Amino acid sequence: MTHDAPQTGLLTTGRDEAASADLDALFAQIAEGASERERERILPFEQLASLRAARFGAYRLPVESGGTGSSLEQLFEKILALAEADSNVAHILRNHFVFVERFARHPDTPQARVWQQRVAEGAIFGLANTELAKARSGAPSVTRLTREGDHYRLNGVKFYSTGSLFSDFVIVRARDDADRAVTAIIPADRDGVTLEDDWDAAGQRLTGSGSSRFENVRVEAEEVIVDDEGKGYGRAYKSTLPQLFLTAVNTGILRAILRDARALIHQRSGKAFFFAAADTPAQDPLLLKSVGELSAQVFAAETTVLSAARAQDVALAADIADSDLKAKAHAAAVQAAKAKVIVDDYVLRAGNVLFDLGGASSTQRSHNLDRHWRNARTVASHNPAQYKALALGNLELNDIPLPDKDFF
Picture (cartoon, one colour):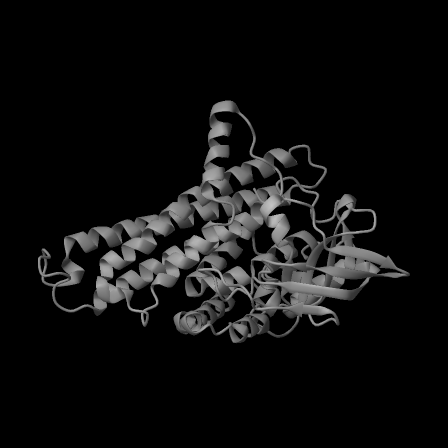
């Protein structure tokens, strides 16, 4: 069963050049106020509403279901551009696009077809997965889904609920009466659901990555997915895609640093410093070298991320019964891990170099350039690159595959 593509939004013409240009124009509008929003803590509800109206969240759906039929590589090209415009907004959509891959792109139940239709209409899905105790110790979820007649009741508190504050639906991970891992997918405005803006990290401050509270929330039977039934979480290396998405966000931040470096240098008049080797910053050989290196790093970061996205395309195209599925998924996980090691190093160093290019005046709060390093540092802290490098070394020297567990 498929649905006719909605006749609204920017995706109605599929992946043609006009639709792509319209999305790029929308991203440019999002970029215009990104620094001010972050400086003044203005949550990007308006920007998410624009993306919802454009149906950007349907980008990966098949054309006949209201999407563009695009590959992951093509989607990631857009994510890089959106993350350059505003890393918070791109990060907000991370869990949505993972949901689309797992449950909506190829629906196999009546309820999954409903979710696909909601995505096609522009709905955004957020995630409430991790609890603070679980994040520290890896303990099982204590959020419970309890049977009550022909439906369930959901109770628990989550943190790191990225995107849920802006979402139409929330994906909640829990344990059922049999202590099985389950997923409940419910409307964000259902009675008993409270989404809080209490995320207080150094960076990515506008992602709504705070608390989600569920107090005796009614959940219908068709809104529940059981892990043991192999739906969504049964594939090998299932966490590669959300990991790669974060690396794409950091690549977008790296692009934004290069953009702002160019602007900083062109805005300066006279010598960069009294002992500089040129009369204008744009001719200063040290600044030229630094910007050239930034440009090369952006190219390398984009190339590795898109290569890893192509590997994900191959892995996700494999049927669950494919005997080579795990090998393809492992190959994709290796590329994603390598991309993270490369990109995190580049972007964190670039966030520091930016101030060498701009001088002391560039540290003024009005410029808000510190947001790039803070945001990149926060994104990079999700599963630190040193663990990726360790696993890659173990693979190279001892032929030990990468871990296939949770959020390695």
